[in-house]
Image 1: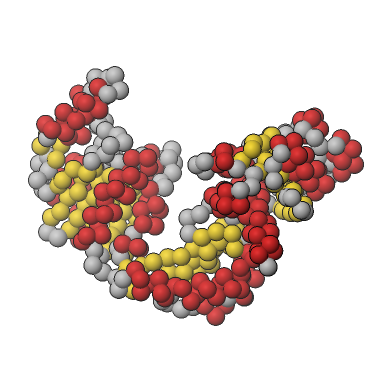
Image 2: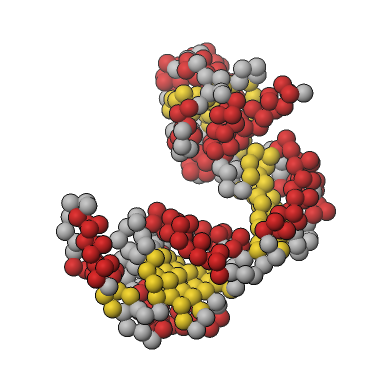
Length: 415
């Protein structure tokens, strides 16, 4: 089954919003056996949208859309589908009643414009949206399918997972595509390529290599008649990668550095504290993005000044001798916060956020230290001198190295 995706909204074309829905849906399709063909961003223009639907129905089996299901005049997805299919929308009173209850539950009166969201054509069925006022549409005509979903990810993701994906699984009988992502840190892309070179260049299973902010990712993709067969094709490749790159692997699939480190801490019953300077709280924010992180994260200090570093336990003489941005200060930060908060591990991050150099060191120079029960490890990085890049790279590296450190400690105890 061939598919395409329309991300709808003039705000996307103007750069006011970034389309994340298209890539998210694309990532869900391979496991369903659906082959992605086209991804388009289309503005809020009725004729342009209707033409896009007509063209899409000629070349694809199914069209997924996000956006344009709101109550305002520029929300035209429903009207465009109706025009493309040659049908007339009619108000469904039951949906009007549900919308009125939705607003009443929030102490509001439904604006008359929201009645627009209760329209339906004969070829369509509503897709319920418990997280918003915009129900989706599932339309079928002449063996072709159009699935319309709301634009906000907080509404679209649950609609997909709870209603759209289960329905797709019932109707798709083509081959299944399975992917396995293996995430590494500590080796260059060229070095990883060399170690597992014999697995590249094959069509099925296919192995791709990608450089990301949190290291080098390896993606194994296999196509087969069913999920079990595809996974059996992936397993030998994965086993070889783990055998050769095991010490550098920190996570799999959609796992993030904060999830990976958090899982390791939770499994070992250990705790973490942080002191960060140039990352400005990004590390603490990443850690606490994970549910139940309070079970292992003691807390952190954003020590953006030397005075606060000293007040948090960093010896003044270390800063005076080596500078605030130094490997020695990062180590002192990690040790101080570990002791201050009584944690098993302490992370210290300092460096030069830029745009100017500091203490003779260029912008983008980063120092990370991890203080554990038995040792302190330090890491030095040079990253592009953009603040968000510095924050993300430093935080990701600190967490992935923490995961690797815990894994090594567990392995040593078991040996």
